Image (cartoon, rainbow, N blue to C red; front, side, top):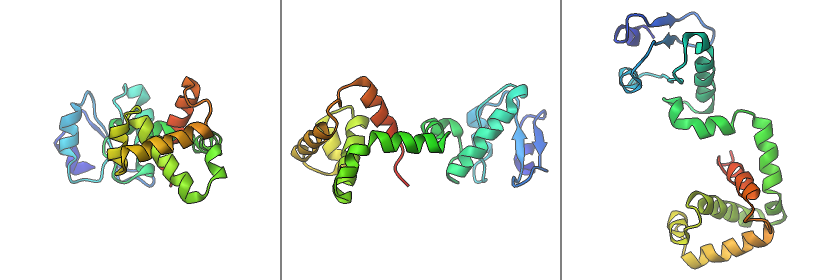
Length: 173
């Protein structure tokens, strides 16, 4: 942390005696883009800006982001993943309940339909965009969506759409 520290605001605090962490920089009123540039080529995660009294919340988010992926540099770019992984058990329960109808199908079919559902939700039902994202013909998307509508009779319900969107929000590990 010390080499990066030298290029930052002089009132930056360095904590380098924390367990399992190389170092933590508490940077006051940082220009986020400047801070990220200063940390280029370093293994670093930048948490959200918080007042000094809430610095521990920023630190906790950065640690959680690092536990999700070593590729995360800026937690602000990964808020959906952080939210969906906040309570792993609750997410698993939601996912199991929301996608339960797919469990009645052969694994390969369920996987294809889940992939189609995810693309359908991400592309807001624009069939040609879904087809392009999945590398299939738009008729294939139409066929798969008719299967999904049979499996999920309340597919048009806002609550069901929310639940399904969250359930397919992260790719299954």
